[in-house]
Image (cartoon, rainbow, N blue to C red):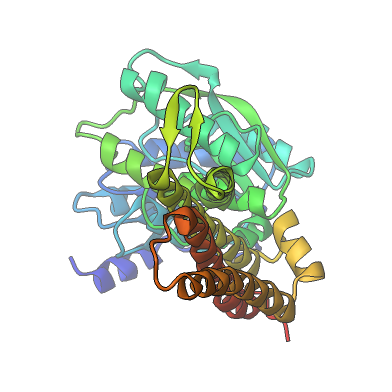
Length: 396
């Protein structure tokens, strides 16, 4: 059946009447066996809570009877042709009409009859409420040991450090949030990394995030899961690294610059012995390498922070705030130009000494020449990067 035909079929599930208070959104790809169970549980939860609600099923290309079962169970179905967990959820959430949205899988691994704590937590003032399977219960057989003891804990720990949050389970599929909060998250990923992106962007925006213990049950599917451990794990890690410039760029870059300059300053006057080890010109070259690579890595981190601040208007970054209040294009040009001049002056003095000696060997100034050249290259980097940073900061 074509996408157009599916959308016409799904339209039969669109309800009318007043806007619902809560929307339950479920991504679906060949969940014929369990989608009806999940939809029914969600509708019963709305009744138990005494709220008006709707169930939105975001079908992602099912070839079985998932759409038919979802509609007959009382859901509204939307069709997302772009493949991926994130793509389906983004479509479903965008079509949801409730101010509070609860998302969860359609394989009955999360109990849709137990969503009231999520909704109440949002009503108490939280923007995003995450389930935590490690504080709750993971029924035997519900999660592969590789995911339970390695994948999820390690990726969540890395994400906690990267995004400075207390969230213990970044990948729990059951969560609730306000429609306004989701709009501010500005998600864009289409795969499984969407789960991490939501939390990361909520942290960037300073949203109020909470967790509640959650039970994970074995799914009721009669087919293999869509999740691919290593592929999807890498997608999560890739996202974390990309959106955590402090840890990917700034800290490593600053460390390399410090080590490189310290090594060059130690050897600027000539070779030295440290604990019986001879440190000569090779280590001066190493210092130049570390300093130049480190500066460029650090600078990329500054650019990344500036880009993130443009994407997330509510983001708070001390680096960007300092740059906006203290930095100017002219400051960058003066700093870069000063480094260039200083390095060239030293090189000029070495040249003058060489000419004065009638072109004699200059072994005693090799270390100094390396340091001066490093300073010149750093100066040019600062000078030209100043224009790009000025553009990113939107400064006149």
